[in-house]
Structure formats: C-alpha cells, structure tokens
Length: 147
Ligand SMILES: CC(C)(COP(=O)(O)OP(=O)(O)OC[C@H]1O[C@@H](n2cnc3c(N)ncnc32)[C@H](O)[C@@H]1OP(=O)(O)O)[C@@H](O)C(=O)NCCC(=O)NCCS
Image (cartoon, rainbow, N blue to C red):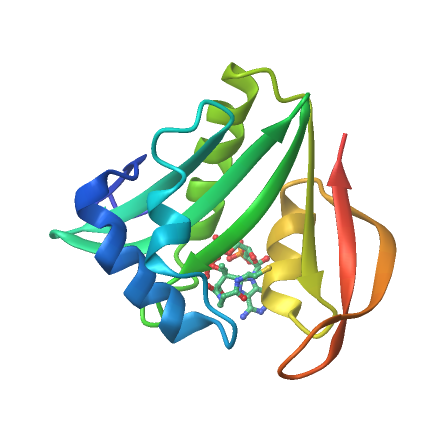
C-alpha cells in the first residue's frame, strides 16, 4: 500500500467526509449521526484511510461479546485495487482483538465479487445466506465468518 496513506481511528472532524463517501458508495447510506455515534463507544470503532488530507476509505466494527460484526467497508472509487481495504480490515481487526474480539462476521451482497474476494483473501468463509436481505435492489446477503 502507498506509504502516503495513513490508517487511523476516525475522529469527529472526519464524520462529514466519511458520510459523504458513504453516500457515493451505497444506495441506503448510513447518516452522519450513525458515524458520529460510534466515536464514544467502547465496543465499536471506525478506522479511516487518509491520503493528502482526503478520507478515502473506512471500516466499522462492533464487538459483541467476542463476536465482531464488521458493519461497513468501503474505499473511494479511484483509490481501489491498491490494498487499501485490506489494510483497513487488518487495522480494524487488530483494534477489535484489543477489545476482546475473537471471531469476525459480516454480510455482503451476493453479487459483490470484489468484496467477497477481499474477505476470502483475509480468511473469511461463507457460512450462510440471508434471503432477500438487501433492498434497492433486492438481493440475498452472504454471511461470512472468520473464526
Ligand atoms: C470492496 C472494496 C472495499 C475493495 O476495496 P479495495 O481497496 O479495492 O480492495 P483491495 O485493493 O484491498 O483488494 C483486496 C483483494 O480483494 C479482491 N478484489 C478487490 N477488488 C476486486 C475486484 N474489482 N474484482 C475482483 N476482486 C477484487 C482482490 O483479491 C484483492 O487482492 P489483490 O489485489 O491482491 O488481487 C471496494 O471495491 C469498495 O469500496 N466497493 C464499494 C463499497 C462496497 O461494496 N463495500 C463492501 C460492502 S460489503
């Protein structure tokens, strides 16, 4: 990964930029408040990637008594394919382990080959399908775990 890319914890100053990136990447985006809410929680966190002052990616995690739900993963278009999501996932998983996380889970759209390949390369395996989980467009969710 580019040495000019900094991976760090999200701060309150980043929330506007993270929410704007979220609106570009998802049809049912989280709101600004959803990201702001994470900041003071002991069981949750958001790591961001920054380059030349610009927020270019993030991963959100939530530790639920050892099972860590990875709830948001994204990299800005134009910065993809450079290992940034991999770096963000590794950083988020390290932080989640430091607060007691031992297993990791996430859900991903069935058609999202880039994301499914990313998670597979990190050791996640498919353990289930949640039929019709996503809307806009309606699609099944693949449930993956890294235990
Ligand atoms: C999925 C996403 C986060 C990947 O980010 P990224 O920074 O490009 O990922 P990386 O560069 O770390 O890629 C890691 C691995 O994932 C796989 N991968 C990434 N993009 C891929 C693509 N378009 N097609 C197939 N495999 C892909 C590759 O195996 C890659 O490893 P390699 O480069 O050594 O082959 C990014 O495409 C994205 O933000 N998409 C839109 C939002 C989204 O779908 N988020 C996930 C929701 S569950």
